[in-house]
Image (tube, rainbow, N blue to C red; front, side):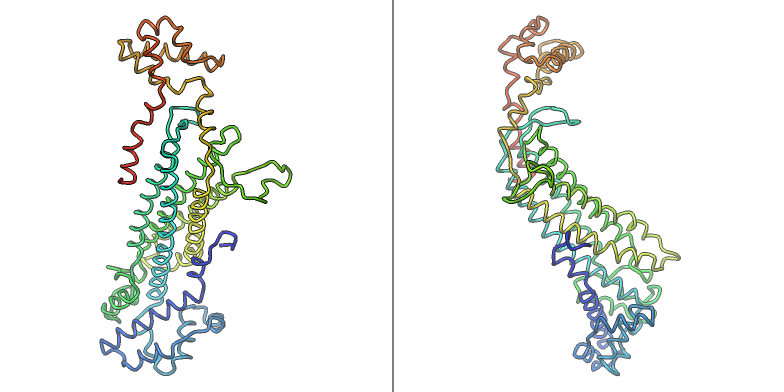
Length: 431
C-alpha cells in the first residue's frame, strides 16, 4: 500500500524483517518440540535460538538462485547456526512455515483493527449522546420522510460497527490456526506434538485437518469480514457527504485553519475525507473476490493462492487500518448544525407529519383509502404551491368533518417522533 494511506504499525507487520522473524520463531519452536520428543539433540535446538539469525539481502541473493524463498531462508539460517542446522525443518514442508506465518500476521493485524474499532465506537457513542435530542429530518430515497435525531444516526452507526467488531473477533478466531503437519498434511514425518507446541508458543490453535496448506475458507471469511467493515465505513461516509452538501449542511467535516478546498475556488469546503473513505472502502472490498477464489486449490494443494495473499494481506489490512482511524477522526471533529436541521425540516411546510394525519383520520373512522386521498391531495398542493400543510388541512371540509382544528394541530408535535429515542439508546448502548 502506498505510504499516503498507511499508518506505521500495520505496514511494519508485513515488512520482510517481521516476516522472517516469524519464520525463525516457527522453526525454532519446532526444534524445541522435536528435542522434547528426542528426534533432535537438545543442543541443536539451543543452538538455533542462540546463534540463529538471518540477513534479508543474503536471503534475496540465495533466492535468485534457488527460486524458492523458504529454502533461501533456511540456507541463510544455516550459515549462522552451523552444523546443528541440519536438524532444522525436520519433517516440515514450506507451507508449514508460510501458512503459520500468515496466520500470525493476520491475527496481529486483527488486534490492531480491533483497537481501531474500539476507538471508533467510543467516538460514535460520544457523538450520539452529545446530539441525542437534536431533531433532524429523516430521509428515504433522498426525500424528506419523518423526524429523527442526529443522535439516532450515530447510534445506528454504533450498532453496526459493534456488530462488525463481533464479526472481526470471530474472523480472528477463525484465522488463528497453525499447521505443522508436513507434506500433504498427514504428520507422516513429524509428530502432531510439534504442531501443538508451535501453536501454543505463537498464540494459535492447531489446524484440525490441513491438506499441507491451511484451508482457505478461513482466509475467505477473514477478507469477507474486512469487506463488510469497509462497506459500513462507506455507508457512514456517504451519509456525511450528503449532510455536507450546500443545500443541506446539517453536518460537515472539520475544516482546519489554512486548509484549502479547491485550487480554483477559494470558497470551497469539500468533504474530502469522507470521499477518500469511500474510495478506500472499494480497495478493501477488492480483496474479497480473490480470497474466495483461493479456496479451491488443485488436488487440495497448490500455491495459486500465494501470490494473491502476498498482495491482499498487506493491502487490505493496511488500508482498513487507515480508513478506521480516518473515520474516527472525522466523527470526533464532525461539525454539527442543529439550526440548519430545524430549518431543513420546516422547508416543506409540515409535510413530514403526513403519516400522523393519515393515522388520525383512520382512527376517526375514515377509510384508509379515503384518508390517504385526503392527505395526499393537500400534500401535493404544498409541493406545487409552497402552501402551508397545516392550514390546507384546516381548510379542507372533508378533513375537518373527521378532525377538529385542535386535533389536526396536535399531530404536528415534533416530540411525538422522539418519544422512543431513549429506548433505542438503551438497546444500542445497554444503559
